[in-house]
Length: 366
Image (cartoon, rainbow, N blue to C red):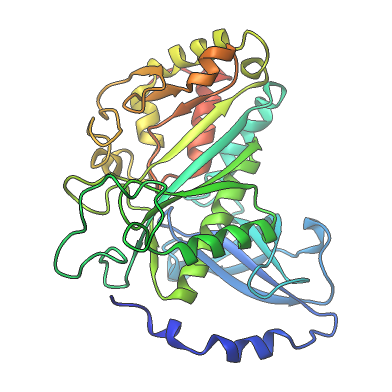
């Protein structure tokens, strides 16, 4: 199994330097989405004291020509801090800060989908939209081969791996547990994790989060995962179909509700929202992966617990439908629904914005 050379460095040596006093100075790592709409970038600066609020963290800039976000002749881009987390790598009082990216003219960069998402969330504030996203991912060696798989073959067929236990059934649990703890330390609203159907595939859940908070927390959770995988020398991919053939793909199922849906008799409001979604299926497919549906078409085939990308469907406890109403929700007559269409590499701002604009703001059109 091919692992990164940097992971072979002696981590015990690093621990000595992490214990050194910082003398009141604080390291703040700025994190942002790059021009691919999927990749994350970061860089760190020193502040004279621990920031207590976003106003304590200055705007910064970076070379957008090196992140697919500008031309070299006009390359400076602005980093605008939007949410602070504790840093699980260099520890307190150091911080991770998620940033929006603005162009030279102070307008949002093309992959800054947070800007329009926040506008939608402000308009829908009175509905109190809650989200929970189920982020699936697959662990790979740096050679692109699934971690733990035979180098010249395949593992046994799917069946024993989902929520499995045992060295012959799960690969990479150290990474999963480290990520879980690191997210809790950081203040990410991580709510669970499990091994998935394909071996070396995992899932973590973030939420419930209200409004714009959902995208912020999921992006930082992804950053923390990539950073932990860096230490272990492996790669986490959000490719929606990392292995062709009779293997499950990877999604980012979106659980969604409003205050009315969560209240007694809320099933009526859930059914109304699903009816609205049925009329905008092509629009949501375009919003649910960065390629506008091309990536997700490899996953949404109607097989391996998916609906067809070409059809819209809904049902109680049906994992082969576009929208699943959990059985408990059907019994309680209130709660939430699960949109199973978003791809693992989706932008959570695009997903949550689309749900709000269709289900709450009543926007129409494909």
